[in-house]
Amino acid sequence: MSKELYFTKTHEWVRFIDETTARVGITEFAQGELGDLVFINLPEKGDEVIAGESFADVESVKAVSNVYSPVSGTVRAVNENLLDQPELVNMDAMEAWFIEVENISEKGELLTEEEYMKLIEE
Amino acid sequence: MELKTPLYDCHVNAGGKIVEFAGYLLPVQYKTGVIAEHMAVRKSAGLFDVSHMGEVIIKGKDALSNIQMLITNDCSRMIDGQVRYSPMCNEKGGVIDDLLVYKISGEQYFIVVNASNRRKDVQWMKSHLKGDAELIDISDEMALIALQGPMSTVILGKVADASKLPVKYYTFRTNVDIAGIDCMVSKTGYTGEEGYEICCRNEDAARLWELLLDVGRSDGLIPCGLGARDTLRLEAAMPLYGHEMDENVTPIEAGLEFAVKLNKDDFIGKQAIMEKGRPAITRVGLRITGRGIARENCPVYHENKEIGKTTSGTHSPYLGYPIAMALVDVSKSETGTKLEVDVRGRKIEAEIVALPFYKRV
Picture 1 (tube, rainbow over the protein chains, first blue to last red):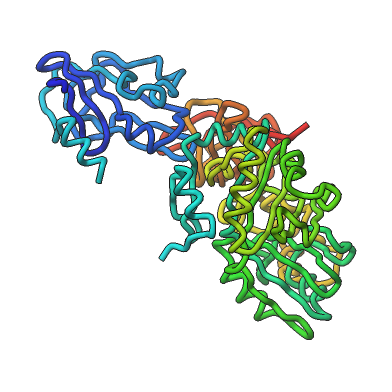
Picture 2 (picture 1 turned 90 degrees about the vertical axis):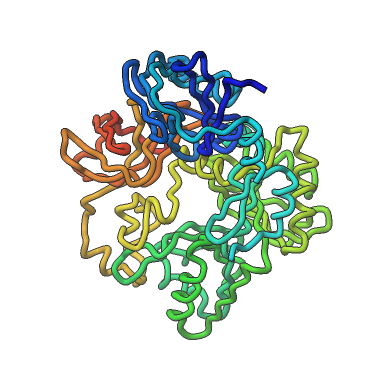
């Protein structure tokens, strides 16, 4: 299992590139629960994100859901492919990152893959 | 406590994602997902469990006169085997429910009501019955399965004698034998496609469901959940109780004028509807041109002035963009009018378009 990859109780994943930089997305479980995604609203480059607070929302056919940041920091890049092709998240949630965060100053409550798997089994 | 329809186990076994709806545990979608299920109905066929709907029978010599008093549409010239849609109003002209009336005979009518309103409806109807008329609520004994889509006639023809099936839209046949199961079959639906709604006894429902899926598989038939049911009816601009109408909206305001017959003899709510005169609000269709999806209860603005609220909204799988219905000020309801919709604090652009959003050719 990857040492850099962590999860949240709210079904996001965070993959650290180094100590203070990471990519964030939603989990396979989350995309399955949401169903077909049709819109994703992302923050802009330079925006601040705060651990535990919503930074994006995803619209499925059925409903809208918030996406919470696992870390606090500054948005270095957003995955603009998702704006036109939200279905990329349904196709491969672990590859379809939402944002890349730099200057990470704080981490929220992060779970290892094993802990997360246990959580979603419940 | 949530109730289960007789098809609950079928849904679970097929991987249905179960949610609570109107007190029942029903699949919102299967593994195929809402978009695929929606498109199956538009292109081939889909099977829906709508057993949660309520079914009542009104019978007796005065059945018709009672129905005429209870609902806004006119059933006086219906022939046996016809189905009619109608709102049912309170004294203020507000909509208690919308329903389908099936004329079995001059002294017996079968009525399908919304699951969420069933108890309220039964109580309301019973308390207003006069003369020789009796109401029997058979909801708990009956299952209802909707087979919808352009392939539905082909599929149903594989298991039933085609000459026994209803042909015209909004007609029905009783005692249709489907593989030995006694069914009532109507040419009705809530999807904007050709299709059937099949009523049978609870104990036969699972066998009928599996049989239809079996014989329809090669024609593209798949089971569909409540998610696709909602997106399909929205594209077809069919109203949903609690969204496009409720007890505070008259059927005229909800855009259901076609089902309100003010020239028939009295009905409950007629006085109030007539006194209101021309409505101040009306139902329109919106194409969302900005980014985002307007769902229900989003304020709608015209040049920064609030002119109404959305009643339903979703991403249209067939059209590929978001759509919504809204009740807005009549003076701003012209097709082509540019509006804004407040979606969680963000105003997104929209335009009034003609209803329905989708019409089969």
